[in-house]
Length: 158
Image (cartoon, rainbow, N blue to C red; front, top):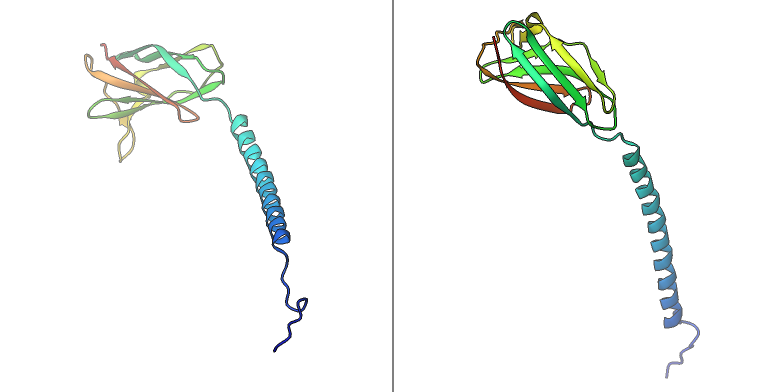
C-alpha cells in the first residue's frame, strides 16, 4: 500500500480561494472606477469649457441690381459672432459678396452692406462680376467664422 502524506500535495482551501477571487474582483472594480471617473471628468470638463453654439437671424435683407446687398443681422445667442462670408446663390450662379468681417455682440444687430461692384461670381477661372437680375429669386447665405450658416430667400429688385 502506498502511503500518502497529506501535507505534501495540498492546494489552498476553497474558502481562501473564494476570498482571493473576491479581493481581486473588488480591486479591479475600484481601479476601473478610478480610471473611468478620471476619464469622464476630463471629458465633461472639456465639453463644458467649449463655447455655446452661435445663434443669429437675418432681420431684414434686400438685394438690388443697382444698390447691391443690404442686410441686418441680429445675434440671438450668448457669444459674439463674426460674419465672414456672404454668398448669393440661384440655380445657375454662386456669387461671393466681399464684406469686412463684422463682429456682432450678443443681443446686438449689425448692418451688412455691399455695393454691386463687391459681388463677384465664383468661377474656376477666377472672380468675374456677378449680374443681379431684377425679379429673380436668390438665396443669400451668411457664414460666420465658426462655420454657422443662415440662409434667407430674397427676390432682387431693380
